[in-house]
Image 1: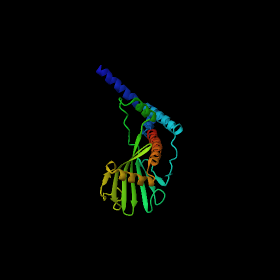
Image 2: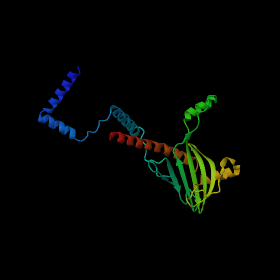
Image 3: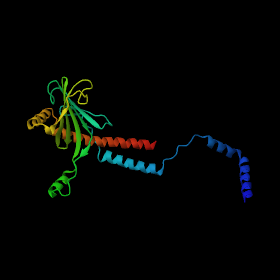
Image 4: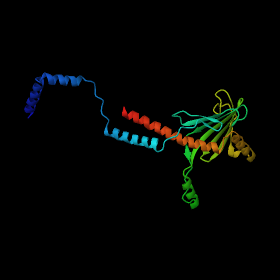
Length: 240
């Protein structure tokens, strides 16, 4: 058996050596040609179909709208790909004389917890009808000369809650992150008169529930734009 296999191998080698010049040239040209790019796998094709279907749905049935560049006295500063947005207001309108108001808002970073099963029925029905309440974090800075008054806030769809009040000195990096301040106070631990004064201070600078409502709409639209951009990036990567 071993000898038969050896004779068969030798005969195939001999036949290969006497192959026609045309066949040999064709083989040579094939072996020396540039590498052919591998075809996409069936999985890649299926993934592309799913991506394109989702992109079409978002772009045609739930399209994002052109984001506004301002809100009241604030100018909106936003860059594609960033997970936050900044609003600025200079002297006048929403700010006092010689002041600058800056608001930095995150994308959605939380939501209210669902009501427990033992909550009253009417409360649970009310919660279901209202839907989930998403949360945004806000850092507000009011700069006047070399002083900065800062506020950390929670923005709900229809409410703005002040969490902390900070005082810092501008310069050397500036803002509430400069580390040159005198610390902060928990808003809930302030006296009633102080809480009312702080709330009114921010309302006069248009930092209130209307700003919270605007930011929630803005961020919902921004999420759509960022999702579309991400899906198109993945589509381009798979197509290559």
